[in-house]
Amino acid sequence: MSRFKDFGSGSARDTKEPLVFKIHGEDYNCVPEIQGKALLKLVADSGSNDPVKSAAAIDTFFDMVLEDESLARFNALVQDKHRIVTVETLTEIITWLMEQYTDRPEEQPEV
Image (cartoon, rainbow, N blue to C red; front, side, top):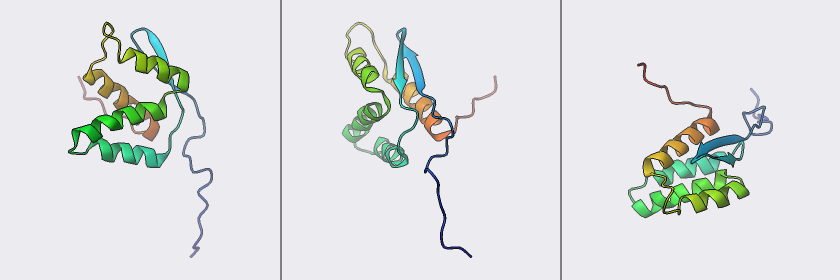
C-alpha cells in the first residue's frame, strides 16, 4: 500500500476554454477555472443566515470569475438605472457558472 499520491496539476480540466455569458447584448468573459477553495467558500457564504454575508458572496463571486475588463463593464451594468439585471437573472448566471466550474450541470426537467 502506497502512502503517496500525485494529484498532477490539481485541475480536472484538460482544456481551459474561457467561459462567456451574454446579458443586455454584451458578452462577459470569465476565467476558465477558479480555485476549488473559493467555490467552497462561496457555497458556505451564500448559504449563510446572514443576508449581508450572502449578498457579499455574490459580489465576491463575480470579482473572482470575471476578467478585469468584463468585471468593470458588469459592475457598471448592475448599477445602471435603465438596464435592469434582476436578482433572478444574477442567480441564473451564478448557477450556470457554478455548473461550468464544477462540471456538474443541473438536470433539466423533462417537458
